[in-house]
Image: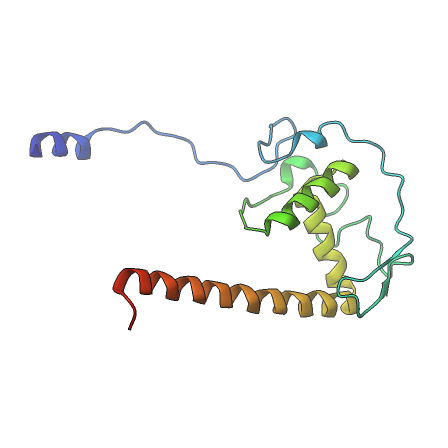
Length: 161
């Protein structure tokens, strides 16, 4: 048995080049939904007001910042120089379904939508305040759920006090 273990520990592994985080123009992204392959023209302009908490109001018909150009990425930046970092995060089931549907209807990826929304709220303090208020409520609720789940797991494992 120890002979097999020493052979496993000492075996030579093939050398692999490190993974690049740069966006390549012809690389297939498995995280991008298929609906983004056939983008339809986006001729919708925001003319309605958005209200995420039903108590405030932000008029997006006249944005104070040019949202067509990112503050962080120049339009002329070649694709090979655009660095991205992959990350995974969890969303509520109902919300992720609505997000997927919205992206599918508009022919964009989730990542691009989230990047654009974040840049918009960064540039608009009123929107940022509304979003942060809602985020703090959701965070508090999720923390309570996590604490209950942890407590239940401890009760199941060690028995009630």
